Image (cartoon, rainbow, N blue to C red):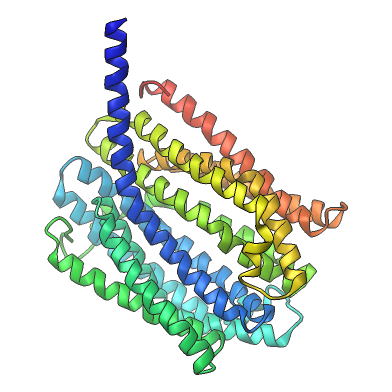
Length: 450
């Protein structure tokens, strides 16, 4: 009995230590994510003062910008995981070679998407077939101006991946803080005072992210741990980055593409419905960003443990991350059920949009805990370099949202709410599936107790 109690206490101390380390690593990441959300929420608040048409314009252009960021994750996710493995193995030269290869890769992707957005903005925005010429023109202007910030945004994302892989998450947070403060300051000035409208929102974002990049550069120059090895990319290392990052990128790209088609379905209910979906995603992203911080911390710690060949630590990291994320999911579930109307009224004044938004959040509340389960399980798989598993699950079940939205939206009494239920249902399925896949993976690979 005494021996059992002693073993129990030792195990709990290890869990406590892992949990504390995970929490301290995750907090700056969460802060960075929330500041990124602050970028978007600030834009929505000030753009929202011009009405739902302006919100719909920014939201429509934003779908394609997010598609570009999703493609960039080929490099950012791959570099983050491979550098974390190298850090765990205490091989700084290897980490530096992956960093250099990642920089070349991200520059190539940024150049491609900048050219595409610049040359074909009308074709992209025309996809939505929005009936308002004013909304179309605002969306085109926002997309064209945002094109100038693509390279800056992508390199920022790479620096975040590199610093986070080295557990330097506080640096990423400080860079995000600087960008958010600049953006929050410039938005009202450019949008309202100088009457630039949605174009002002785009300019503010570019300037803010430029400031973040300048901070990253000086932080890199001062850091002894972060390094870039060589001038030219190592082809083999770049292939390794692509191999690990591509499944995650396919997942994110498919997610963005699916949401573009989903937005096309939603557009049948008018600009208000598009605005509701855009704002609703921003509100829900608060949960997503907090849990995403824990997910990223799990990925980093699992990656470093894997690189150090200390795989018995992985189940403890998973359990610590899951406990924290489910706590967050429970709180946001209650908020979405109790005060959805209050949350939505912050962003738009129209009663119709607020009512739509209330229904959106109450339906999405059902899936919050399952989303947490999905993300933390995916974080473990990603840290192990097994990015194909969560990517496959995500692509399959997220794709079901399109036929689900079409059938429930147009052929049932649910109407627009049927679209929201298709999103919630797929999130539940993803969470359950990844949980059992991870449980099976642990059992078959002797990682210790699940």
